[in-house]
Amino acid sequence: MKILLAVDGSDYTRKMLEYVVANRSLFDASHSYTLFHAQPPLPPHARSALGTTAVQAYHEEEAQRVLQPALATLKAQDLEAQGSWKMGSAGDAIAAAAREGGYDMIIMGSHGHKSLAQLVMGSVSTQVLAQCGVPVLLIR
Image (cartoon, rainbow, N blue to C red; front, side, top):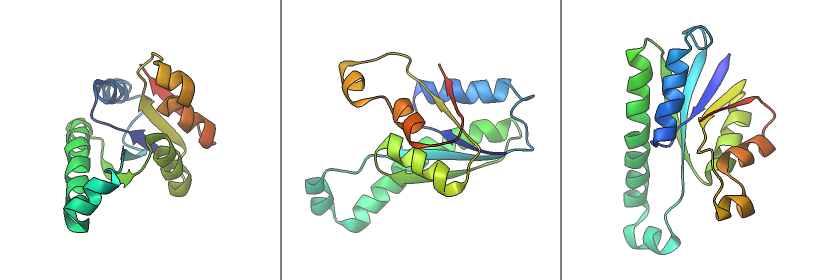
């Protein structure tokens, strides 16, 4: 089974990874894991001031800052994974990565509360659920 693990470096990511590791009977080494991080683009004025090379380097550094600790967590438990990232809205990018990569399941952390902005625009998990046709496991 191909499993996409959505990570953002938060405590919710940590809890999700702890769940995966604690449930080895469900999530063992026979599955294929990809840690995926979605990064919001820098504002246009920042991109133009910094230039393409600096912006790309910034995004790569930020992605690795999130992905490397998560990869290390899984590796310490003998679970091999690859890391991937894309610039864009988290909900859109996660759903697109799942579709394009042919994943069988998405696992992601959930904040478990609704702010006013989430009530109006929807949470990342709600956006993912609405856009992709694969099972989504939310960990709180």
